[in-house]
Image 1 (cartoon, rainbow, N blue to C red):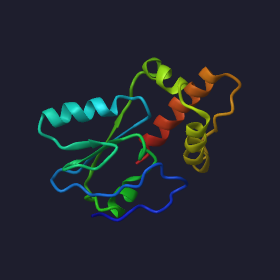
Image 2: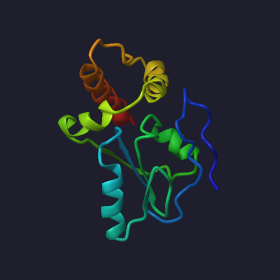
Image 3: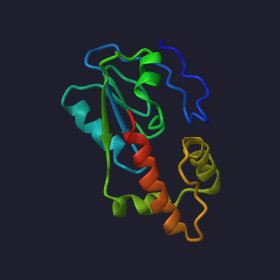
Length: 143
């Protein structure tokens, strides 16, 4: 069992395991960006990537998009871990994000805020979703 990553701002879920096979792969994304779909596809190709949980080769997760390469290494991933960023077109993500309740927005703000990104404070809900999509993907692209 790998080490738990410490309370980095607000981890939505702790990273509890490390992959057991090579190569170690991490796919970061924003919520509603088809991270479950890429897992199913890779699993059908024999690559064990878990959706929001570590499997044989790694993880596909929006929950851990704020983790850096070093955070994953500290949790037990290889130093040469492959980190990919999956981005889905924003218009395809809006409907899912529009359904997020206030508690989920508060949790997202606890991750975005300490990194200097604007919080969800715009007047309109659609504008908040667009802001969220942009900055969550920007945060996920940082290695």
